[in-house]
Image 1 (cartoon, helix red, strand yellow):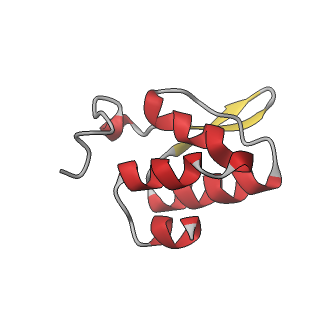
Image 2 (cartoon, one colour):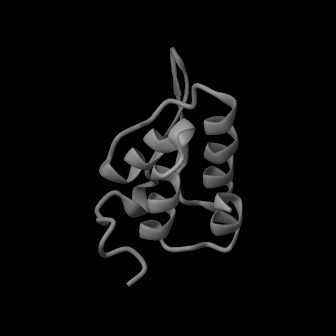
Length: 84
């Protein structure tokens, strides 16, 4: 379901809601709170790569592994104002 929402370029509020509801990947939704969550399991890695490919986030290398972060074009955008 999350895969479909990402591929259909759903709005960020919808994605955040779906991602937050899945325990294994819920902390990925913190990327829209300007955090940089670590892709530290297979589920996060898969969803993270899909978010990167769709342009919602960009990758960031870290000594602990790969993280995701907001692209520059979305840094000044809040979740409530994106795609309205």
